[in-house]
Image 1 (tube, rainbow, N blue to C red):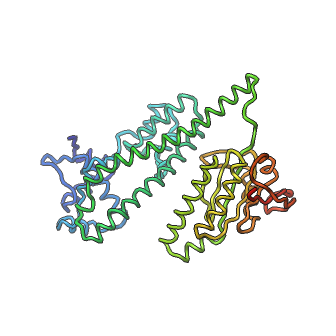
Image 2: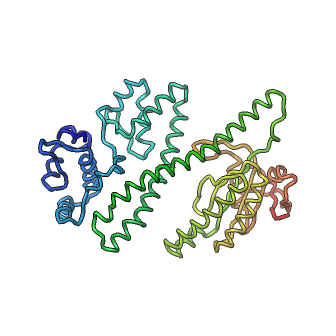
Image 3: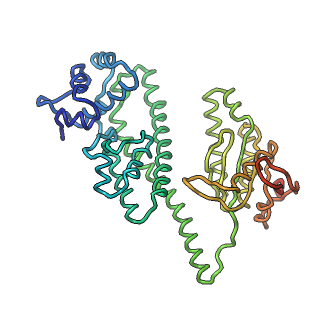
Length: 398
């Protein structure tokens, strides 16, 4: 087992040697007879530092550790190796070594929600893989803005996964354990943690690769279409994608009135409904927007069918009626989100729609030839924030 001197341990934990001395005296840390510290003790030191920064009284923690009510020994588990130590290299030194601009390298920390580091700050072991990834991207000619967009989206998406996982563990393990009067060792349950952690990581990787397969397939199809067109063959009929907004008036107020648990249940039901319907019809939910959801559909026709399904489904789920708007046209994708006039108009159409209505633009109607959906012409209307009138139609089942 690798161990470290007091000076090395303090540096890797990001604390002072005096801190280590004090925490050993309090009985919160253990050291070997030769005044050396294991990796597990270094992780404990980092955690103790975080507890102190959070304002918890260390003397009180030391007292309940001493009487056996609490333990930090779970940090010795391999599952907690993700609590990374500091390396000997700073961002500035890594920049000089790799030739990568230091501001680009520092994205490795910003991407996971860390405070913007200084060039002289030391790199965490967990950041080394990201730094190598950045270095290779630049060598291959990737532009720094594209690298930054990818890292920020990955970091934000994985943050949500990690926080949901932590909440899952809290509600299913920690809180029931506290209620049942379990000991600290029983609640931390290192054996279960060691078993579940690799399975959770494998599951996330499998889900990620499944998403990759779909996204890569879209790139392959688009690339093949370009090659076919250049060779003189007709590709797919060119249909613009559709953006869709589904808003539920009073959804936030309703969830506030029903309480947190009911709100979570409603949100879960709505999430399942819109996710299943959008995917079934060749689309995807892009993001949640307070009382509603924004969608992208490759083909406007199935997008209208999905919108009608969702408008009916929210009522069946016990939610207030939805008002939905769709517009077809060019969009710009950046950072996993969609931008442009098409998005803005679709949002304004949804605002204009009455509860229970699915309204679409003329561009959507023109892209729906041969669809089983029918439309009622509402004529040109003025929409808030949109220059000029927009010709709208009300969609309904054929």
